[in-house]
Each structure stands twice: as C-alpha cells, then as structure tokens.
Length: 352
Image (cartoon, rainbow, N blue to C red; front, top):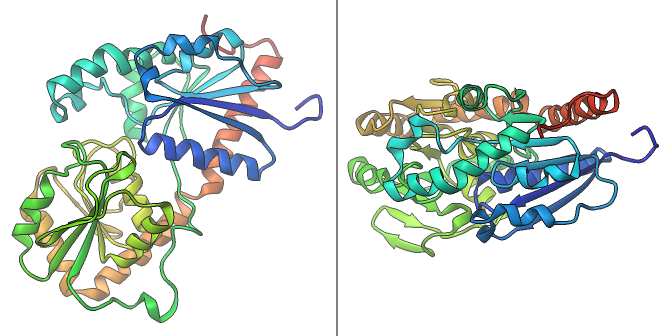
C-alpha cells in the first residue's frame, strides 16, 4: 500500500454451506500467508431474504478491497471501495433450470438470483472459477469486467498416503461421493449405480457442508454424515476412486480434491468438471446420465489396478501444477492490486 501498511481485504458473506464457503476460507488463509490483512465476516442464512439490511453493517477500519459473493455484495456499495464478486455458478443460467425443481427455481429467481444480478451491477470485477461459468456470466452480465481464476486445494493437506500404506487395502472396491444430496449433484444416481455394479463394490457418501444422514449402512451404499476436513482427506485416501455424477457444476471441488489425493475420478461431463478431469488420463468422463458407461468405467478401474494407480498419479500431478494454490491466490492478489491502482489513478471502482 502507498502508506506502507499491508493490504486489508474485507470478506463479508452470507453463509451458503457450500463450496463457496470453503473457497472464502481457503483464499483468506492463502492471502494471510502472503502478508495481507483479511477480515472474514459471516452472516446467517436468513439474510438471503433481506440482504439490504447488511448495508448498515460497519466496515472494519482500513479496508482497501471488499470481496464478497453474489448473495450480498451489492449491500456494501456505500462504502466506496472496489468490490470483487466471486460467482461459482449462476443459478439463473437457463441450462441449470432442468436440474432443479419448481420451488428451487422460484426461490432463486426471486431471491438469490435477483441478489446476484444486483451484485454483478456493482462489481468492480466479477471472477469465475472456470471458463464454463465465465461464458455463462458473459451473457448474464455483459457490461461488467470479468476474469477467470481457477479454484485450488491445499495439495499438502489433500495428498496421497505415503509408503506401504498406499497399497490398496483388501475388501470391496470403494467409490467416494462427496456432495449435497441433490438432483444437481447426482445423488439419485447412487442407489441405481450400486445395484448395477454388483457384489464387490461399495459407495461411501458424505453429505457435504449441509450435512445429511449420519453414519448408516444400506447394502453397498454407506452414508458417513458430515466429515471434518481431516476426516474427508482420510476418506479420499481410503477410497479407490471418486464418483462425481453431477449434472451441473460451476467448478467441481470433489473432482480436484480426489485428484490431489491421487485417486482416479469417474464423472459426468458437465459444466466445468471436464475442465478439471483429463478424460482417459486422470479419470473417465461420461455423458450425463450414462449409467452403463459409468459401470463399465468403474469395473475397468477395479480389474486394472495399474491403470487406476496411473490415473491417480496423473491426477495428482495435474492438481499440483494446473490448480496450484500459488496460482490461485496470486490471481486474486493481481486483481486487488489492479483495482487499487485504477482507483488511485481516478479510475472507476464500482457502479453507482
């Protein structure tokens, strides 16, 4: 900063119990490691219904940049600071409509989607995690400055088991599903897939940040409930492949986390997942809803451990190089510095 103090980024966000929350915490941690002062402030989910109430929230002292999500970023325009908005997927994308029910659609059209449009209008920079989402937002907010900064994982924490323990443990071939139990995430596919795979296979499921069933058993499908980060890493390490049957994704954290732990990924080619998984190299990408193809891919991995290991190793390498934390955090630092320079030289920092 021109006064010699560290940059101060304020991150006021409504809790979403989703990957967006994970992203904010990971970004804040990465920025702090680089000497940036970061204040993360979480607001209860009820503010989705009246985000304008957040306009009276006092801004911390010395803030240079406001970084928020589409649910409430517009509420902070009165503070006259550059506003960065991260949008992982736009809920009013017409292509998304087929993967949600009428209640969800009405709620998103009247509440969350409306808030996002207002936030796009005041954004100094709108940031997408993938080309897929960028292309959607280029249509939704054509007059807003936009860029892409891919997401990342801590590849030291999300990492494969080292040494002899890395050998496959005896028992059924285990698939791990990480995500909320929704149609968009493909949770409905799991029972059908389990029945088609037959004996010798098991699907473990964790309900994501929104929780889900506690640890229960149901044939070859087991629900683990909500896991801590350390427990989640162990679940990735303990599985044989990661299952991502999502029908729509703005990025796809589960695929990347699995790759970072050196596990092959079996996924539907939706949204941005095919920007993460290198088909036939780090896993298998199937058309959305292709159960037959998914079964064949899983069976192929189960009977060919050399292939499974090679795909896992390729995935680990891709996670460490293409989706490195340093690249992601530096991408946001570059955005912040560019906006501060533009503001200092009399440029536009936000829409009125």
